[in-house]
Image (cartoon, rainbow, N blue to C red; front, side):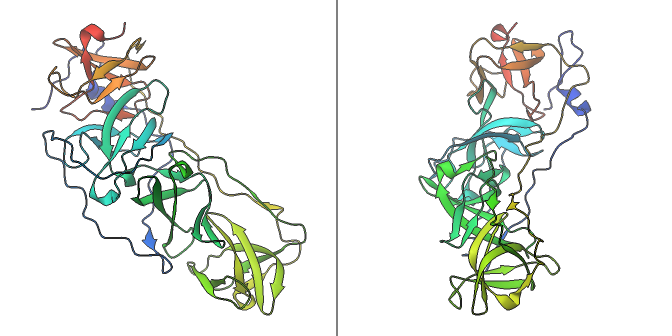
Length: 368
């Protein structure tokens, strides 16, 4: 039965969320990534089943020990469940910035959800739920080898988790401007984060010559007239920019740094040399801004601050298992009071409960 919203002199309930201000911010959706010819095909895994309306005992899922932290715009509409498989919805993201900690990442992410807590160390309304790892944006914090010594996923770029071990993650990146060509690389837990780190520019020598790809497909070699280690497949009309200071017997030693970094040899005939002087001093890797949506209530209630940790429940029932905690020092809205229970929302409005639930705390523990 749908809960009727009540208020306590504020004239404001959860229904007011329908009047949230217009969203302004970056769309954090990811493009579909297909595996390139140089990488193993992704294993086919069944999707997580639709959630039933009642809570279930969490399934035992083999998971990684990695914990990734950061603040990012939770993808609008992505739901948090109370179990890694099945379960019920306890919250949904709105598109505003939310602190997050992602953990218990399944070894096969397509088989179950990862644990996500909406806190990253500072006081927050922490909801402990489960979400598909693909619905959380992950960034590389260091260069990750795709082909040893020749091709890397560059630090500071969005990647998709495809598998995990106890202490490593295997991730995938779709090359910009390519024919949906994806590359994969593995790295330790500390090589990833939920927000981008600083980017590292590539210094280009003053005597370097610039080159552009001439064809949509270009082979990369481990040495002049050596073995092919990678094939770059670009969309017709697009290309990659490289620089070089060395050539030998019909081959050019090329380097570049964008979403992938390359240090390899290519055939002279596959490249178009730029005029001398058409070369920047350095390449600066693109960076990703974490701009979330700007949300607000038409008539916001007063903001209060918690002075102690307070358990949060999805239902007005003491027998309900808590789904999170209001951490001491957290600022929040008191939305409504119903029969001894008070419904709350985070000031950021980064997440909201489902229509048939809420973020409930005992009224006797509500901050003043």
